[in-house]
Every structure is written in structure tokens, then in C-alpha cells.
Length: 258
Image (cartoon, rainbow, N blue to C red; front, side, top):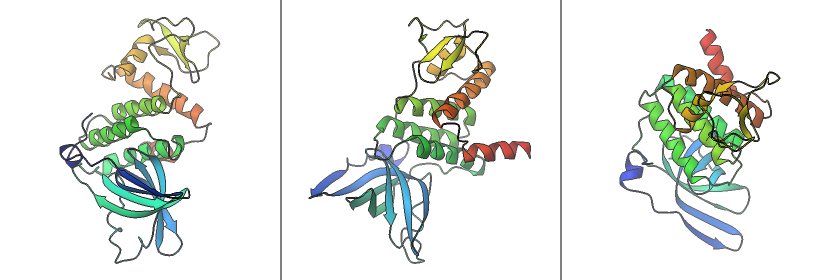
């Protein structure tokens, strides 16, 4: 997948790593801010999703001070080149530069972006690298910024996240007999094992085989696929989140009711 803007036209050099004892120094690492919160009086703890190191927690010292050059840089949904050092789980941010080249999310897409961020924070372990998922995240932000169907973007990213973290089975294969899913069949998806033919006793969402195959091929043009995939992903995510609701989803539901 091509990353838009400067990240593609002039790729960042792969991060250099130097070690002195147990201390590690990382430089020029592509990343995005997922979340930040106040740390002590003038600093921030920043949760950054990086290309080669996954999620890392970094202390941005003095970032809340009016004169800090980091105040305008550590923004969500903007591609950054970051560096850090340290030997504990909470490392020190040493550099952060805006890379540019991506269209900012408008007001209607911002909440969907925060939904993606919350999924990454909740389902991705710290320092667990997923370069493919990083590319999917850039792809999702780009599509949200260009007014593509938000629901399609979310379904593609949700499934990619479960695949990259190793908890999604192959939706094109019947888990019971290992035969290809039949487009005309009616299935339920076991969160741990994958699709199987639905029975009368099943309480999980029922989906057609065509919906499962459409999801694999990222084809959400069929209204039935749109509806069934939404219910299915909601069910699978709830399982892997141990039933704890997502805050951004609750806000989206509240806004629709208003």
C-alpha cells in the first residue's frame, strides 16, 4: 500500500538504534499520536503508534509549556517522525517532527478517527510491532479524509486489526469441515474458531456466506453485506474486548439518537 504525501514520495529512513547498556535510542521513526494525558505539571505522556515498534508510551517533557515546540506537533491523525530514549516501559521523547502529506480529518470524520485510535489502544499490546496494521491505519485515515464511506473504512480496519493481532480466523473457510464458505449458506462466526453453518440454537449474528466472502475481498457495495458485517464485527469486537464498551461507539450512538 502506498502511504500518501511526503511519507511516500520521500520515505523516512529506517529507524537507527544505538544501545549503551540497557538504554535504547530510537530516531526517525514514523508514527501517530493515539492519545495523550497530563504528566506532572508541564509534561505529557503520549501514546504513539509507530511503524516498527508498535505502541510506545513516551514522556514529552515540558510539552505543556507555552514556549514548547512540541505543543503544536503532538496532534492526533498527523504523520510524525519521532525519536525516544530510555530503558523503562515509559521512555523519554527526544524528537518529534511533523512529516505532512496527509489531508486533515474534517469534523464529521474526527470521531471515526478517534474510534480507530481507541481500538488500537484497547486491542494492541505495547511494543508489539505490526507494520501491516500501521499501513492499514494510514490507509483508513486517508479514506476517511476523502469522504469515502466511513462504514466501509471502519469494517475494513476492524477486520485488519483482528487479523494482524492473530485473533481473526479465515472468513472464507468453514471451521468445521475446512471447506470453502458457500455464498448461499447461512453462517455464524465463532470468535475463536471462525465460520460454521448456523443452527437453531445459535444466538450469534447470522450472516450469509456471500457477506463473509465480500468482507474478505473488501467489497461492501451490497446493502446486506453492509448491515451484516456491521453486526458481525460488533459481536467479534465485544468478545475480544471482554464485553467492555468502547467510549467512542457510545458517543456515536448518542449522536445518532440526537
